Image (cartoon, rainbow over all chains, first blue to last red; front, top):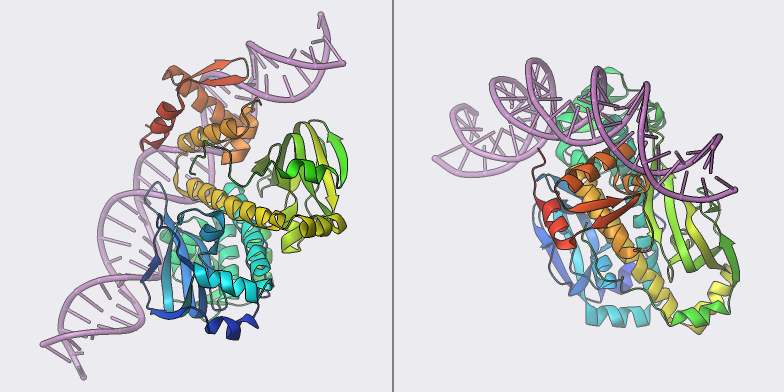
Length: 217
Length: 217
DNA sequence: CGGCTGCTTGAGCTCTATCAACCCCCGTGG
DNA sequence: CCACGGGGGTTGATAGAGCTCAAGCAGCCG
């Protein structure tokens, strides 16, 4: 997975004000479900504050974290655009405020701000690459590499959040135990420091370099 | 991965004639590379006949098949829309004729047929679900299940093509040997018949049922 | 018919999941 | 303010699914 240090280009802050006059504000706390796999979409969501994860259950009963959305992110539009029921469930990770925009208003919003549709399209194109890069990694990269890249990715995108070992594992296809072991090793190697549940990365580049070294014996 | 028995809804045959007046026709034979990972997109591609695979190399040197495109499919538009270099390489799987549409013409084409952009957007939304379903499967489903689903998916989408064990493996994250072993087992169980390199599925539903049974001991 | 690519089968090994036990941190309520 | 409960984290031992390596076979094209 290519790590994006900078915020994805498809975030357009200017829309913020415009959108706020549409749709209704909703609040969630950690653990709340926003929508559930299988439901029929009725609108799309725009986060003004907080963090949301898109998760699904895999065949062996493990949770899989497919994507994460922070503030200024839309979500729920994939299913809307594909005209499919939701293929996964969204869960609130930290206290979140968002705008729920029913389809009727999406239409109107798109008419008023034609760049919105293009923005959503771009975000799909972007997320598709991420998903396929993740697939590639899962198929051929050792856990250690996946864990490091996920750590860098998640902390870069959402720095002000303490990611749990479970969440990191769900994101990259590893168990909590394996993540723990990896982090312990990284700490011994002097690349990170554990501070309670927080993980301090000493130097992103060094850590990334380390993850690219093929052999973990 | 949810198997789609029917052709994906985002194929719009009516565009065929309209598009043919744009762009230039190109031909490829099996093994030809159409574009390569890292290159900067200059246009998009539309297949009039044949089969193309989007592949990448994983960390351990294995080939990964991310997507396949048949006739009436566009490809190369993800990178165009995301404004990124290609994140993977497209390889011709069977003799293919396609139309190459440089960006200048894409613009014009979109103006003339506004539904085209929406069509491309839908295909991205659709492919994103597939990619995430594949990720989920890879993360939690035993190989046997993945192989069966890939077999059903690939043969449904592109029935008139003899998929090799290697290709099936690359698509679902398994080695050629593992695919062979799985197919041998399926033949012993009376679910498929091997006819040379061709694989005859006795009954899709029975096979699918079998793949959903959790335990492969 | 020769050679190449793809397929098959076997043996062994390794990575990572699984199971289990324990600890630590933190928030909550008495 | 302390006790307690529970979620999260750590560590160890073990097992097994599927990969790797190897060697031979079969189908297919020139």
